[in-house]
Image (tube, rainbow, N blue to C red; front, side, top):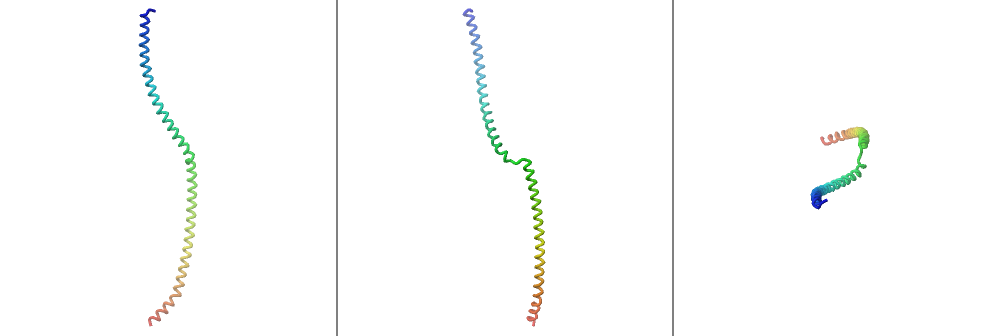
Length: 128
């Protein structure tokens, strides 16, 4: 190969290398941008991991649909029992009030029987 041919080959290689340097620069810029994106994605994944861990800690304490249905049934049964007991108490109280009212009526009647002659005697004494 002659020196001129070698010079031509070197110039060709130099141009190709120069083009490759430009392309490599663009690739490095793209990789740097991707690194920034990857850092943001990694931060997001870490945040999601923390949130998921928090949710996993809370989940066991939450009631399931079956738990709520069971509790609802228990509450209805207790409510029905309370209604029944309240009705019984009202009926018992009503009977006691009736007995007390009759007793009071009887006592007032006895008082009236004893007080009537006294009032008549008092009128006679003061009218004369």
